[in-house]
Length: 400
Image 1 (cartoon, rainbow, N blue to C red):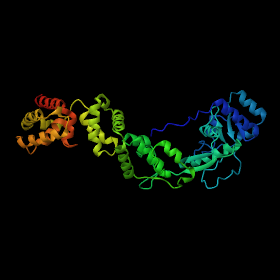
Image 2 (cartoon, rainbow, N blue to C red):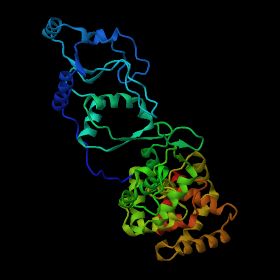
Image 3 (cartoon, rainbow, N blue to C red):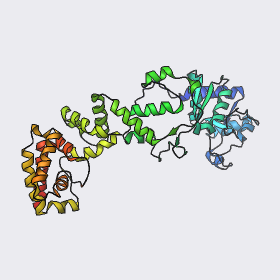
Image 4 (cartoon, rainbow, N blue to C red):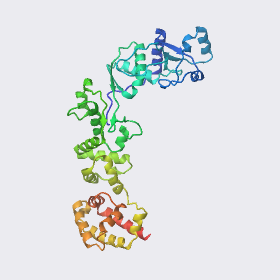
């Protein structure tokens, strides 16, 4: 969405995480586990599968110093686990999955678990408020247990409820087509997505830029309810956003989208890019609406399927091509004005040997399509030379 982070969260150094875990062991809120992988697989399966696939039975807490030394001599590597009290503290107002067994915070290779790393990162950042994805709430009880073991004064916690679609279903999975990356691929502008996301859980007022939103943001103004993503509203917002862009910004947005889709938009000269943008933006709701135009114009020639090829080989079509070539000769200014093409098309249809099918046939000749955008703007973007090249290809195609 074009957001630049204020700061980066550096990955937690393994050595430092191990040092902190050692302090927990010394304080009695953690202990070293020397179980092998095969021993862990023999334990009960954890139905919640978080934060580990098995329910640890605590056997290593009972090891004598002699047994521990013997296991270490055998080459066993110790992982560090947090001690879970028999009656863990509840979390008021939060329906989290309470820890049921001592769980790992440092693996046998010395690397911290993601859960342990996230607690250390937040503590190091001196976070005073934490916004928590509602789908991650099952992790919260384990997260808070680590934080309390560290003796950290906990920050204010705010749960972000999941987004819903218009049918009341949770969205944001990799398959529902509503992730940020998927919406970008479908032609939604970053500014529209930013505005949509920001206004979902609070009222940014007249703020439109990220800086204005940051200045206006108040944690207490956040709504506790799930935001609803209505596609019709997002389309409207996206269209308004695109129309509000300057010509330069809109050309850039269209160019970046088409380049991502594999169309050589930036290979064209800036004047053509501006003409393209002016024409296609009149009815554009998303940047994807430019792809049909690009498929017709940003290729060296038209592609013909079997049915269109049959039309091209018709003597009637060949006669219409010859007649249309004369109409092209009458167009001024290299054919860059759609109005001159409207006049030429009207004259062509009036004088054509087959007026009833003249325009539909020429559309297929020039684009390979039976329907699509209006012919005058297509011809204005092709230009006189581009039209002649495609007419010549159609003529050769029919006789090959």
